[in-house]
Amino acid sequence: MKEYILLEKKLHPYALPQDYIKLIFQHEFGPGHLIADKDYAQKRLVNEWQDTHNLPYEAEQDIGNGYVRVSLKGLDEAQLGKLNEAFVKSANEGGGSDFVFESKLDEFVVLAKDGAFAFGFEEAKAAVKEYLSGGIRPTSHTKQYHQHYKPAYRVVKKEYWK
Image 1: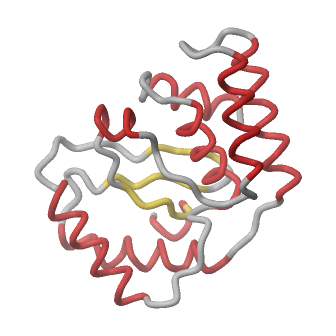
Image 2: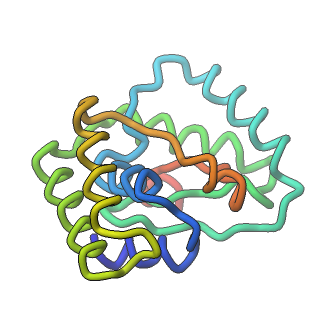
């Protein structure tokens, strides 16, 4: 997990603890929610792509555990159907372990204690505690992350995307 956390730090230096929690969640659980309506997921994907496809290309980000974040930035419209298929399949597979997820959160907090981030140990520890108090669930990127990076991607299993 450490290498993926440090890659996130390198690619997105303005990430805050909540953004790392999101990464760790995606690493463990993938997209993290069932997709009941494939057509609706496709419409949302196309709408989001229309807002971002003119932005500079952004490479896939390997987030580990067999998952990648596939950026919509610079993606060709012809690839959207394939991406939606990979997203729906990845989301509906399920998987992951709460126990393993929490141990990965502990790794993140230890990295913060070792001074790996601009924010400190106490901030990381408090963010994890606050997150866990609401139960294990998908979360959003922070406002700061959105302002700096305009994230637009889908988390999919590599094997379904390649």
